[in-house]
Amino acid sequence: MEIIHFLDDLNQPYSCNAWGAAGSIGIPPIVDDGTINTIFNWFNNPNGSGIYPLIIFLDHAMEIVNIIGSSPSLNVSNIIIEAMLDAIPVDIEGCIDESACNYNSAATMDDGSCKYIVDCVGVCGGSAEVDACGTCGGSITDATQCVCPDGEVEDCTGVCGGNAVVDICGVCNGNGCHNQNCTTYPSSVYDCDGAKLSLYNGILPDKFDIISIYPNPFNPVVNINFEIAKSDFISGKIYNLDGQLIETLFSEYKSIGSYNLKWNAESMHSGIYFISLKSGDKSLTEKVENIVSCSVM
Image (cartoon, rainbow, N blue to C red; front, side, top):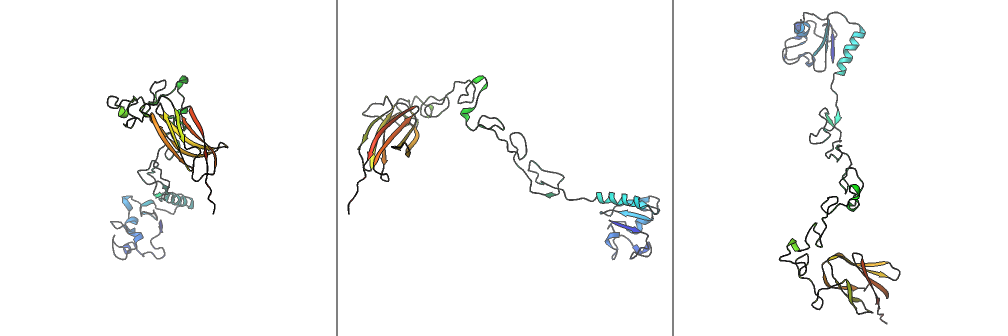
């Protein structure tokens, strides 16, 4: 901002003509807009206003803000100057990335606040998420806890009160056959992976049972033969006399058939252990004894 009061102010040219023409070499930039106007033009009937001013107010862009033909009061001058100061652009901090959901078109300086994800409530940068039941902002993490209206139960397709169930191959509303093809892979002959069912003595198992455990006592490996009559999620675990879980041998989905399981107790102490097999709500437990041989030097 520049205020020139009288053309004979200190360090100013001594006459209007001394300002020269626009673009002339040696003319101070503050008095030359580079096009057609110099201080001489502004004081010589500026913009055809008909006023030959005593004072001209120039803003930060060298634009004439006000021209006054007589000495203004201090109050008037302050009002004009304050308005000029208010008009000076200032940096506005905010997100300047147009791809952000909180982009601020008025911002001129990035403040690192850009957010790019809108949550399920519609809040940019919000933390609300859809829970296991499909409720925005809900807190349920287990889909089995979702409650349908009027106490109905949601089936595997997500329909409240529906009758679709997951088959033995883990397919919702499936038929229990490999690739859902019961013509080529009938469930009575093939498991869910398309492999023929295991037989025990040529017979398909008719119950969940431990057939044999040998040797018993053992050192250090024991064999457990068992059979399952229904494809299900099966687990095999080892416990000590205090009921503490020592090792989980397996925990997986198994098809109907007969199986052999080995437990290597090489790192275990001598003593009594319990082998526990569980299928659904059924469990089988057998006692085994590990005898560790001691060598005498």
